[in-house]
Image 1 (cartoon, helix red, strand yellow):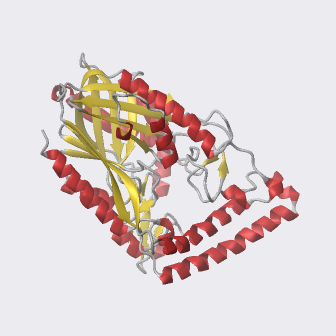
Image 2: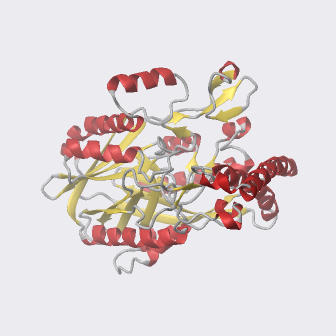
Length: 484
C-alpha cells in the first residue's frame, strides 16, 4: 500500500471548436453553428490516495461518445495513470458540437445540390480529444498534497418537464393555453440538492470545487451559437466570489426528466427576471453560486487529508428495451407520417433554389428526416433484440473518504437516482449522468405515461435496465463502504 496522503491536481482547457461551422447536437433538426457566444470548457480534477486514483473530466458537451472517450484514453500514455479511471462526463449543453459522425446524418437528407459545409464530427473529436488529454496530463502531473471537504445545500434549478393529463398520458413540455385544461399533475419528483466537493492545497487555500446538481444545461437549447449554457455564467459568478483562479468542475446528477425550464407559472417567472434585470442563465448561475456560498464557509474545519480512495470500473450488461410487435407497428406508422413530410420538404428544395437563400433553410427537411429514422430504428432494435438482448455499458463507482461517485451513461430518470441515493451507505453520493453517450433511461411510471423520452423510440435501454443499474451500483457502493 502506498501512503494514504491525498494528492490533488487541477487543469482546465478550452474545447471550443477552432474549425467552424460545426454541427450542433441536441435537437431533431440540424443546426450549423453561427458563431461562438461563450467558450466550451473541459475541467479536470485528479485525485490520488493510497494505491488508487480518480480523474474527473467535466465537459461542456451534450454527451460523451465512445469515440471521444476512447480517443482521449488512447492519448494518455502515462505509466502511473490508468486511463480507464479517467471519467469523462457532460453537462448536456445543446449548443456544443457532435462528438461522433452520425450514421444517420440529417444533412444526408438534403439534395446533392444543397450540401451544407461544416467540420465533421471526427474532426472535432480529434481536436477535443487532444486538448482534453493534454489537460488530463497537466492535472495528473501537477498533483500535490492537499485535502478535501464536502457539503450539501439546495438550489431550485432542475424542474420536472413532464406533465400528465387527465387521460393519464404524459407530455414533455407543451403545457400552454391550449393544453392547460387537460392538465392533471406533474409526473414525478424534483431534486434541488447541490452536492459540493471542495479541494484545498497544502496551505489550506481553496483550489477548486466539484458542483453536482440534477439539471442539464439547456437554457439556450435552441440557439445556433456555440455555448456552455448556464455553466458559463456560473463560472463567472463563482470566480467573482471565490477567486479568479478557482477551478470549477460541473456535474449533472440524475436528471433525465428535469431541466431548468419553468413548466408552469412562466409569466410570473419572466416578470421577476425583468424586474431583476437578469437573463434565465444569470438567474440559474446566481442560485448555484448562492448554494455554494452557503456551504463553503463551514468546510475549512472538516478537511480530510487522507481519505480512503477506491475506484471500481466495470462493464455492465443491461437488458435492451423489450419491444413488442405492436410497438413496431406504431413506430412504423409514425415513420411513414414523417416520411411524407420529409419528401415534401425535399421536393421544395429541389424545385425552388430560392428556398436555399432563406435563413436556416435546411431545418424542416432535416427535422423530418431525423424523426423518420428515429421511428425506423425501433424496427431495427426489434430485430436486434432477438440475437443480442443486452448492451454493454461502462459504470464507475468510487469511494473518496465518506462520499461516493457513481456514473451512468444515460439521461437517467430521477426515480432511479433517488433509489441509489436512498440505498447508498455513504453520507453523500454524487451521481454523474451522461458519462457516456446513452439516451433516456425512463422510470416505470414515465413509461406508463408515454410521451417523448419514455417511448421505445427514445429508449434503447428501458426501465428494466434502470433497475439492473440501480442494483449493481448499490452493490458496488456497499462493497466499497467496508473497505479501509
